[in-house]
Image (cartoon, rainbow, N blue to C red):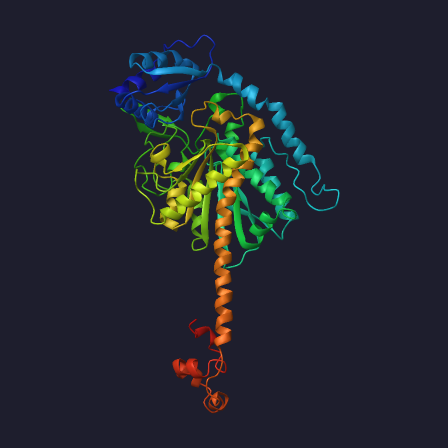
Length: 509
């Protein structure tokens, strides 16, 4: 009945718009379990064209942020008042805020044009230097072109990789850093699976920019390039991202979260609801559709018709699976809430077998991240620090690919802030810098473990060589007369004629 009331008010044609016709963001505080349950029902089933949840309901006395379209704000207030919610209007006019924080279309177009028109190699010393200015937002075509230029100019350290193709035909591309070899461990970093999270996409591009421009001066990055293979895919949902850029001051477009897959319909109890797009981070095959997602296509957390029903998630899962066995860390960047989330997020008090290591590295990363600007992060599983959800990429990667360090990072600002998707541009670079400091802890961990294993192999080899000698003097004579002796009597010959038979690798150390 609670849900039906909200759906009814959503489709009434006679609703009067707010006086200023503005998209508004309501900050709501459920103060008891009944109110929390009501909010959870709305979150899972509300039409995003009417009410778009920025912060999902999680706990009693935990804030819930909802963007409401102008034609529904009056009725939404009535609904909140009727059920005695404590609330405030956190953003009176979201369009005005977007113009103030992110600028107009001309500025964005100028940024894109400026990059596309510059020379490929414009460093005064003749070496390649990335000239994509950080602290700005760019179109997907600019980001893709930038990645191509890097790969063309730095083939020794960077390779353009194609993960797959989106529903609208865009190539999902990224860069592979470091010389590959079968024994090296792999780290994958992605962003932009939720299209409105521009700060996450900027952070991923900052990582690439840093790898390129500091490759000859930063010992830490040199260590990564030598000892690891790092993939960075800055925009997993290019269709959604480009849609958010179609009208950057229109909240309905700018706050789009999902992919741009074809319209699907489902009966919501009153009518057939038909909407476009799937929440790609609910479409992975980990406890699909179990919790924290919706079967209604108009919900912002619509999980899709089946696991991996979308070309983006299907291609990405195949790409990650191709790295299985060497893929030691997977990090996906989101915004916002200042959280470092590890598996598993479908149920409270449910952990992976290697939780001690996972938690230790997360705690160290959060601590290191906070050293730079004092930013406070929390770490834990989804239900421990935000809310339960399933069908996410990191849980699938942990469960299916057995990746040791699998993390979702929710960037600035904190959970209690109300403008997280409209981050001030002057916070973009600090956000990226501190996040790199945290991610560096994971990279250092993987790198040091690999170097340790390599050192052990070297020491073992050295020890075997020292122990490798012939105990008996007749080994050469026997082998000359019986060429197959080493193979036919391998145990005896390893003991007595290891050097002559070239069986040093079998000696126990």
